[in-house]
Amino acid sequence: MAHFAKISESNLVLNVVTVTDSVLLNENNVETESLGQQWLETHNNWPAHLWIQTSYNTAHNTHSNGGTPFRGNYAGIGFTWDSENQIFWHEQPYPSWVKNNTTALWESPIGNHPELTETEISDFVHYVWNETDQVWNKISPKEEE
Image (tube, rainbow, N blue to C red):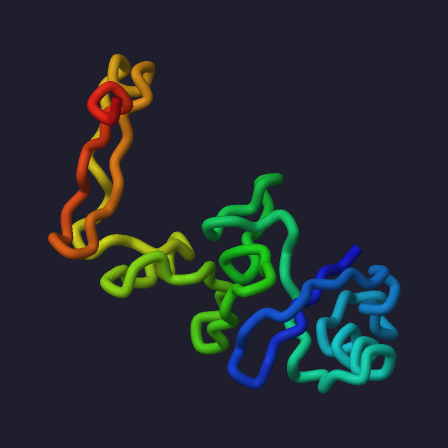
């Protein structure tokens, strides 16, 4: 099955639908996105250019089966389509975070949080982004009690 995101004129993903692979095959038996877009326009009364193919097997610009990643992330309702970079983006988690086009992930302006030790992991310690101070705060469940 092929998956297509239905997007608004402002590039917001409104829905994701499936179509049979045979809809996408051209006269040379090659999968062609535009054929799926035309089929969806005909059968869903939504403009062809607002149907964008997405890959169920792609997340964080990695293909889960070792194949070639396609469009950064599998589209979901509420995601945004970035036509310039050909990536579906999750909602921006914080105003200061920036896009990483290589990983198709949002990143804090100071990078990833520090590594946790094995003990911290087993004690459910975690980091939470503090947008006001632009830092990662370490949270320990023991301290929250």
